[in-house]
Amino acid sequence: IVARLNDYMRGGGDAEGGGGDSGLFIGLLDIFGFENFDRNGFEQLCINYANEKLQKQFIVAAAELCLRDYQAEGIACAAMAACPDNTAQISLLEGRGGILPMLDEECALPRGSEASLVHKLHTMHGASPAVFGRPPPPSSRPARA
Image (cartoon, rainbow, N blue to C red; front, side, top):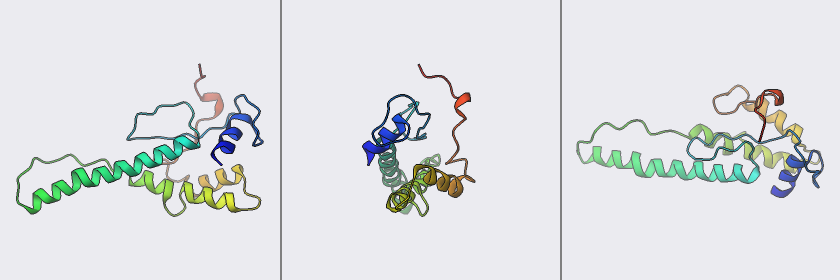
Protein backbone atom coordinates (compact mmCIF):
# COMPACT_ATOMS: atom_id res chain seq x y z
CA ILE A 1 0.00 0.00 0.00
CA VAL A 2 2.78 2.40 0.95
CA ALA A 3 4.72 1.78 -2.27
CA ARG A 4 1.62 2.18 -4.43
CA LEU A 5 0.60 5.40 -2.66
CA ASN A 6 4.08 6.86 -3.03
CA ASP A 7 4.29 5.74 -6.67
CA TYR A 8 0.96 7.42 -7.34
CA MET A 9 2.05 10.60 -5.62
CA ARG A 10 5.29 10.68 -7.63
CA GLY A 11 3.90 9.61 -10.97
CA GLY A 12 0.56 11.13 -11.65
CA GLY A 13 -2.21 8.58 -11.85
CA ASP A 14 -1.55 4.91 -11.96
CA ALA A 15 0.06 2.67 -9.38
CA GLU A 16 3.03 2.13 -11.70
CA GLY A 17 3.99 5.79 -11.56
CA GLY A 18 5.32 7.81 -14.41
CA GLY A 19 8.08 9.80 -12.76
CA GLY A 20 8.19 13.54 -12.52
CA ASP A 21 6.33 15.93 -10.29
CA SER A 22 2.59 15.32 -10.23
CA GLY A 23 1.88 18.29 -7.93
CA LEU A 24 0.45 15.93 -5.30
CA PHE A 25 1.87 15.80 -1.80
CA ILE A 26 1.09 14.98 1.80
CA GLY A 27 1.97 17.99 3.94
CA LEU A 28 2.67 17.30 7.60
CA LEU A 29 3.39 19.53 10.54
CA ASP A 30 5.43 17.68 13.12
CA ILE A 31 5.47 20.11 16.02
CA PHE A 32 7.56 17.83 18.22
CA GLY A 33 10.13 16.70 15.67
CA PHE A 34 12.88 18.02 13.50
CA GLU A 35 11.66 17.11 10.03
CA ASN A 36 11.29 19.93 7.56
CA PHE A 37 10.70 18.36 4.16
CA ASP A 38 9.19 19.95 1.07
CA ARG A 39 7.28 16.73 0.50
CA ASN A 40 6.28 13.86 2.75
CA GLY A 41 5.22 10.36 1.81
CA PHE A 42 3.02 7.87 3.59
CA GLU A 43 6.06 6.50 5.45
CA GLN A 44 6.68 9.95 6.93
CA LEU A 45 3.04 10.18 7.99
CA CYS A 46 3.46 6.88 9.87
CA ILE A 47 6.77 7.99 11.40
CA ASN A 48 5.24 11.29 12.55
CA TYR A 49 2.24 9.44 13.99
CA ALA A 50 4.53 7.15 16.01
CA ASN A 51 6.56 10.17 17.15
CA GLU A 52 3.43 12.02 18.29
CA LYS A 53 2.28 8.97 20.29
CA LEU A 54 5.71 8.57 21.90
CA GLN A 55 5.89 12.29 22.69
CA LYS A 56 2.47 12.17 24.37
CA GLN A 57 3.53 9.18 26.45
CA PHE A 58 6.77 10.92 27.42
CA ILE A 59 5.01 14.14 28.42
CA VAL A 60 2.57 12.27 30.63
CA ALA A 61 5.23 10.05 32.21
CA ALA A 62 8.02 12.53 32.66
CA ALA A 63 6.27 15.76 33.47
CA GLU A 64 2.66 15.41 34.50
CA LEU A 65 3.05 12.29 36.68
CA CYS A 66 6.19 13.67 38.32
CA LEU A 67 4.44 16.94 39.12
CA ARG A 68 1.45 15.07 40.59
CA ASP A 69 3.78 12.97 42.74
CA TYR A 70 5.53 16.09 44.04
CA GLN A 71 2.22 17.74 44.85
CA ALA A 72 0.87 14.59 46.55
CA GLU A 73 4.00 14.36 48.72
CA GLY A 74 3.92 18.06 49.54
CA ILE A 75 7.25 18.76 47.85
CA ALA A 76 7.58 22.36 46.81
CA CYS A 77 8.56 22.72 43.19
CA ALA A 78 8.87 25.68 40.90
CA ALA A 79 5.90 26.34 38.69
CA MET A 80 6.28 24.49 35.44
CA ALA A 81 5.29 25.91 32.13
CA ALA A 82 2.38 24.07 30.63
CA CYS A 83 3.51 20.96 28.80
CA PRO A 84 2.87 21.09 25.08
CA ASP A 85 -0.28 19.17 24.25
CA ASN A 86 -0.38 17.19 21.03
CA THR A 87 -3.81 15.64 21.62
CA ALA A 88 -5.26 17.50 18.62
CA GLN A 89 -2.59 16.07 16.31
CA ILE A 90 -3.10 12.53 17.61
CA SER A 91 -6.88 12.85 17.27
CA LEU A 92 -6.48 14.13 13.72
CA LEU A 93 -4.52 11.01 12.87
CA GLU A 94 -6.27 8.26 14.82
CA GLY A 95 -9.50 9.59 16.33
CA ARG A 96 -13.04 9.10 15.14
CA GLY A 97 -13.06 10.54 11.65
CA GLY A 98 -9.26 10.82 11.70
CA ILE A 99 -6.95 10.46 8.72
CA LEU A 100 -5.94 6.84 9.34
CA PRO A 101 -9.48 5.49 9.95
CA MET A 102 -10.73 7.41 6.90
CA LEU A 103 -7.87 6.03 4.79
CA ASP A 104 -8.68 2.52 6.00
CA GLU A 105 -12.35 3.02 5.14
CA GLU A 106 -11.58 4.44 1.69
CA CYS A 107 -9.26 1.52 0.89
CA ALA A 108 -12.08 -0.92 1.71
CA LEU A 109 -14.54 0.72 -0.69
CA PRO A 110 -14.77 -0.92 -4.13
CA ARG A 111 -14.56 2.48 -5.83
CA GLY A 112 -12.49 4.29 -3.23
CA SER A 113 -10.17 6.93 -4.62
CA GLU A 114 -7.61 9.48 -3.58
CA ALA A 115 -9.93 12.28 -4.68
CA SER A 116 -12.75 10.90 -2.57
CA LEU A 117 -10.48 10.60 0.46
CA VAL A 118 -9.19 14.17 0.07
CA HIS A 119 -12.75 15.47 -0.27
CA LYS A 120 -13.84 13.60 2.87
CA LEU A 121 -10.83 14.84 4.83
CA HIS A 122 -11.47 18.47 3.87
CA THR A 123 -15.17 18.08 4.65
CA MET A 124 -14.48 16.50 8.05
CA HIS A 125 -11.53 18.64 9.16
CA GLY A 126 -11.63 21.78 7.01
CA ALA A 127 -13.13 23.84 9.83
CA SER A 128 -10.06 23.15 12.02
CA PRO A 129 -7.27 25.04 10.24
CA ALA A 130 -5.10 24.96 13.35
CA VAL A 131 -4.46 21.24 12.84
CA PHE A 132 -5.66 20.59 9.29
CA GLY A 133 -5.22 23.11 6.54
CA ARG A 134 -5.23 23.20 2.79
CA PRO A 135 -1.83 23.57 1.12
CA PRO A 136 -1.14 26.74 -0.80
CA PRO A 137 -2.00 26.60 -4.51
CA PRO A 138 0.87 25.27 -6.66
CA SER A 139 1.51 28.73 -8.11
CA SER A 140 2.27 30.19 -4.66
CA ARG A 141 4.54 27.39 -3.43
CA PRO A 142 8.24 28.16 -3.46
CA ALA A 143 10.15 26.52 -6.31
CA ARG A 144 12.08 23.43 -5.31
CA ALA A 145 15.78 23.32 -5.93
